[in-house]
Image (cartoon, rainbow, N blue to C red; front, side, top):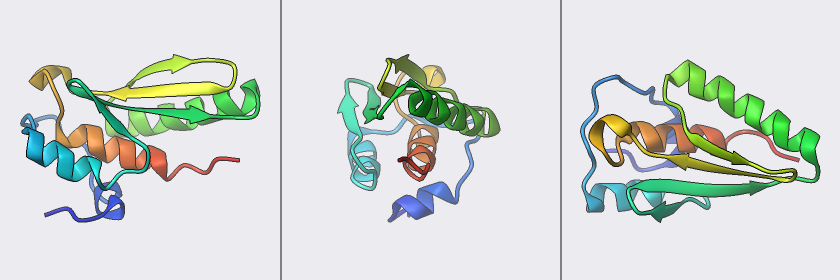
Length: 110
């Protein structure tokens, strides 16, 4: 059983995943900082001082997404980045979404 964000960060995404039920998703969401449930996905908006900081964050996030082979939908603005995770293969949320969200939360930000 995963009981902390650091526990999520210690895991790696897998290719075969099962959909999470509402209670499982709610328990994992409670371990994350600032993420919200939006239908069948989790979403968080990040704010920055300028475009350079925004893009530095996006590039670091892209590295995580590539390393985990699990990619979010991004909405990038001048000083903002909204990150949206769901797992298309299960048509909802999987453990992979929460693993990546926890790893993104650990990125340094100014």
